[in-house]
Structure formats: structure tokens, C-alpha cells
Image 1 (cartoon, rainbow, N blue to C red):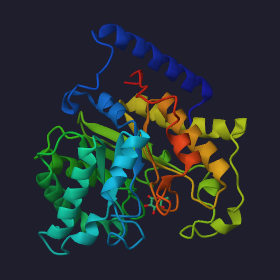
Image 2: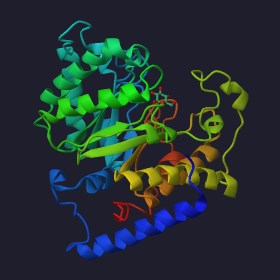
Image 3: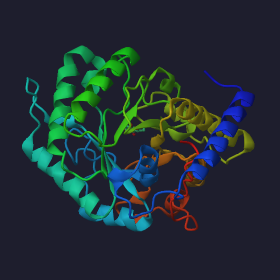
Image 4: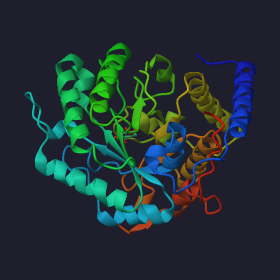
Length: 362
Ligand code: BGC
């Protein structure tokens, strides 16, 4: 449902007023960098995520390296030095677990995941560990439900002692036969499962329909104080996915630009406002877990769009993660071992270096 402009303005006013009330009723102005992550409420934790980048095409390939990217330890330092506060690490756990009960995760693979998590945490980056590309559950949900839950049971036990800066993202982009009803049910069970061993860990959860904004209205969440809701944003799709070989017909879109005209900007703003409206009405903070434009698009347009989406999120207190580090959307050029300047400057503009959230939306 799209809300009318008038109703939206009313909601925003309400948010601002409640923000004023909230800041008046608090004795301190907000969390300081020294506060332990686990002592923060879920909005403050989300603000700590702030600016992330996805280490895409590495550990969510069938095997690390199959898609040309392996995670190098110095990537984390490079990411930290650029000013990011977090990394999202997509992992295809389903390719590394038994197919029969008890669906044991492969120990060698898990040692590699342990290592990558440590390397990121050691650089003071928050880690969003994301269960990505479980394609079989999208096609045959009933057959994979127990396996999905058992994989989470193992991950939750394995990482229960890790600091709060390790965050679990339960499933990337539910779609296809994993309908919203089924997904709401599986999600609730997965959360219960994880809570047995990780009562206060931050969990990132998204909706059916590829984590789209339109899918948010179908998301049903249990009572739980430590959930951050994620969505993905690739609009206009004809611009961000031009020439993408996994999107049929996308060669017809080659040459689509994004200059940031008034109409282009208000289309993005109105999409994000729809997400914020959902967030305010449902009392959940938002994390944009993926946004990016594929490299056949011209660099000036990619940088314009990326900067516009990132700033528009920050204004709305939405933490974000760019898709992705070093592959086809890559902000980093792994061959020349340097950032692609227009993209990194779009993501982390030199003049705004610290967390700007004022917590008006909670
Ligand atoms: C997929 C990637 C894809 C990206 C943009 C991600 O969720 O895992 O393979 O490149 O979305 O379409």
C-alpha cells in the first residue's frame, strides 16, 4: 500500500515530535562509543552498524573462490580505514551442511568462517553474518525447513560466546515457494531456536519477496527486543541491473543513466519513505542490507545514485550495506588494489565521518 503524501507528512511530524519528547525524557543525549554493544537498545545498535559493505561473491559462491573472490585478511583493514563501521558477510551455509539429519556443518568450512569473523571483529568492524543463497529452501520449503533450523541451531551454539558485534541475518531474500505465510512461520521458529543460546544477540530479519520494501507489509514478527528489519534496494532496476547476465532482457537497458533529476530523486525518496512509515508503525529499526549499481552502468551515474541512496538512508536513520566490495558492483578494484574513487567517495564522503543518527525514529 502506498500512503498518501498528507498521511506521510503527518507520520513524519509524529516521529519528530516523539523524537523531541524522547530526547527530553532522556538524561543523556545518546550512546557514546565506549558503551558496550550489548548494553545498547536495538535502535542504538542499528546506529552502530551505520555504514557497511558486503563481502559479496566470496563465501556465498558454492565454494569460496568459485566466483573469483576470496576473502583476504587485509580487506578488513582496507574497509575499516576507508571509514566503514561494519561488514555484511554472505555465506552459503546450505552448501556445507549434511543433507540428512542432523545436517552437520562441515568443520573445515566452519573454521574458515570462524577465521573470517575474527579477522573482521579484530578490526572493530561489526559483522552481519548472512545466510545467503539457500536456493533449495526457496523451491522446496517443507523439505528444507528442519535442515534450515538445524543449521541455525549449530551456528547459534558455535557463536554464542562471541561479542554482540557479531550479528546474525537469518535468511537472505526469501522468495518463490517460501511464501510469506511459510516464511513468517519459519522465521519465528528460527528466532526461538537462536534465542535458546543467544538471548540478546542482534538478529537481522527481512521479508518475503526478495527483501523488498513492498514485502514488509507481509512480515509478522514475534515479540523480541533485538530485531533489526532489513530490506534491499535496487530501484530503478533498469538502471542498477543493466547488462546483468542473471536478469533476462537486461541488455536492452544498457545506457540507462541516473543523473539525480527531481523526478529520479523523489522516486527514491518515496520508496524509502514507505519503508520508514512501516518502521515507525511497527517500532522496528531498518537496515538497508543491499544496494548498488552493476558495472555496465556509467560510473558517474553509479556514483550519483549510490551517494543519493546512502545519504537518503542516513537522513532517515537507516543503516546500510553497499552491494558489494570487489566483484561486479565493486567499490574496490582488486586488481589494482585500490578503491574506485567515485564510488568510495559516494559511500563515505570525507566531510561526514561519524555516526549522525539522532534517534528520532524510535
Ligand atoms: C545476490 C547477488 C546479486 C545481487 C544483485 C544479491 O542478493 O546474491 O548475486 O548480484 O543481489 O542482484
